[in-house]
Length: 492
Image (cartoon, helix red, strand yellow):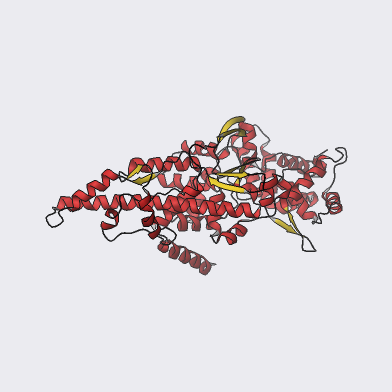
């Protein structure tokens, strides 16, 4: 195990060494949705005097083709003549792929539950943490799934932080920060599996509800800690024998455990209440009557950037008399060059971000074309990150960053990009079915069952087979649990 750990750490360190500051900037910009990108660009305009808002001159296009970010991992210059050959740095906007400002898409307000990510960040702001702890906590919060659970291992998250953010955080350090998040409300958030989620809730009751039967809470904790496998298999007699409990006490403890919330993140919006949220789509997809699909980026509020002409004039003045330059003049020239390097790098990073976003979204459209033509959810085919990565030639981690927190406006509504991804199920004859489709049919079967005599998982399995979905009973049970639907005896 120690050797394996050393290999992972060595690999991460080697990748960090090859990741340039320009590439790190691209990765960070790639993760931003449209609204946050606008804020980031405006912040850069305030911070860097070499940047200003405005359209580029057409004569700069030839220079742009010479130094595209796709050809060079980083942008560097040997002399200031690189800046002085052209009046401006090329436009970062992809004019052919961006809608004119006169054709602005409508911002569509939708009624949605308050994001538990926002609520967690509010709770994070109330904690007394170091800047580093706060940064790690925000990363962990952003890694939680929709149920509020942390499905990815801390070891993998540690590697991701090192490779993509340049942050060297040990698993132990992440564990300490995760414990802080697990103290947030509601109880169970930040758990790494269902067992830990339930244990957190039981232990929270011990600390905050002293009036409850303390002995029963200890029994619940003991069942989850020492008999979790028996609990999941409903082997109540084995639990009684193992813990020396009578049947009544065991049943009461089991009943209380079943009342706990296995999906604290999913239920959080319901407890907070509804509010009107403004969703600003990152992509705009239009479909005409001839089944032509047009993709554009929604950058209507993002300022266009160019190199500041006043700044360029200032550089020219400092370079007129190179032979008699003073120390102060040379230092000023170095400062100007650094700002211009940073400005060019930022413009290139924005352009590369947009290229990557367009390439990824186009691949999703190609793979899910029937849905974008008809808007029928049942037409969505099984698709995972790897499918899009193979089609675009991009890394899976890049596809993950593009699909996270991004929305697309279609002719049928606004969807989160994650909506288009789902696993597939392969039948015995080689056919492929979408997991989303199977879940939909499963829910329909349960909704139409006799509530006085609910269908067991075995009966649901047989019913699905009759409908052409030959999946195993354990798969039926897994999908039922993922949808938050209890077992048959609890549905009466």
